[in-house]
Length: 312
Image (cartoon, rainbow, N blue to C red):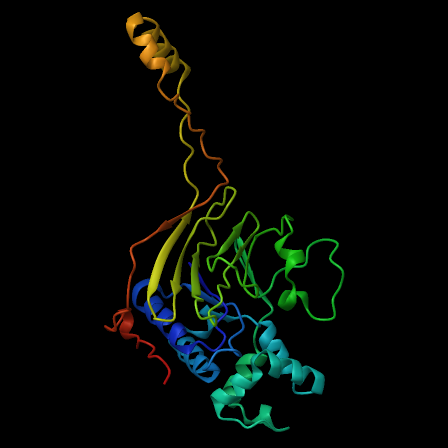
């Protein structure tokens, strides 16, 4: 199983809740965990986010954890060398990131970040293919996409989201906040950025089976954490089409009505006619809410792994 965690943006408490639940209730030693990028900026505790990421990687093993690069990490890295890029980063949440470290802005701000955090940011990957899924922060440029100055895998939006192109795998992405604050699910892509830093936003963690057969839309389970650290679980599935009424049954009903006494015909004519429901198309999706799992318990999980505490 692959667990993908959407854009975090400095929300350390929400991340701690997600990782505690993942460790205690879901995670197997062979599972992969993919973080979709945008660990920093906008939220109050980017430093706490990195502390949790280091802890989790040490706990689950570096070979089973993938850190994708987001456009906010891209801005942070380029801000070191270009005053215009630095202004862009600071305007888009960099001030909050520096504040979480207690760093006063100066030309030496980058060197004042912890070395382990700088190394993690520099080592982030641009994309991660895995079986029937392909994980990337912003998206994959479709055919005919005009080159842009920045790497489109970190910055693309509408051109990718609007594309119906077959990318060879279901593309799982973040970067663009879904207005419904629920995953965006299409035949060729799944978006899981649900605005964790917004007042009503949520952090989404989705579970994908990379070997599962996909007929039309992907089916998967996802979990959402809100700012009260409540977790809700959902299963995204395609409803089975309703069977059509058989012709034999329909003819039998018509024959039965024809033999009814004529005295009842006037009353039947005044009844509201029944409208037969049509079967739902195979590619329609339905959200099936699972029972809320509430607060994660803090009992020791299997293999004596330590639960990850919320950052102070």
